[in-house]
Length: 186
Ligand SMILES: Cc1cc2nc3c(=O)[nH]c(=O)nc-3n(C[C@H](O)[C@H](O)[C@H](O)COP(=O)(O)O)c2cc1C
Image (cartoon, rainbow, N blue to C red):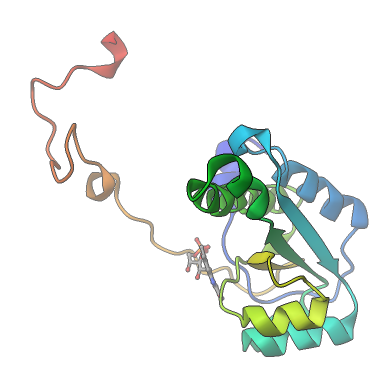
């Protein structure tokens, strides 16, 4: 698929078919996730692949979202911010979260490209998920990504209009001044 088609097609899916997901597809999507920009080119992310139903049920319980258990595979994205803090001090923490977000989006786009579906889940008990998956205390859980073949109708969410998110030259300036240079002439 063309990049734009994949971006338009990606939507959060919370209903899955029983059809098995290919390992190769999951590994390809994780590989795509690891191709994002990383501060200092330090990839501090780990992806836990969960297929065991009992573990999936436990994760579901600690997210308090019943639909998650129906996913064929759950990917838990983790980061080690200490690696970035060593290099960038306090800002390392911010970089760590930012690059995890970029990786998650790459993952979701590749999943869509492969005909699979997912949803970025951010509501969970960090403590209880860490207990279930034996994740060390100092590691951050960045997202839980249930993956499967989607079913049901996909609810297309409304996105912000361009004019509502753009400011010109300064914060809060929503109208382009006639003095703003035409970027094509820069
Ligand atoms: C940081 C973050 C946390 C989210 N947490 C959840 C969640 O816990 N459960 C859920 O069903 N969706 C969650 N979502 C998905 C959003 O609800 C969804 O992306 C949004 O409604 C826009 O819909 P779309 O993804 O189809 O464009 C989360 C998304 C983000 C970016």
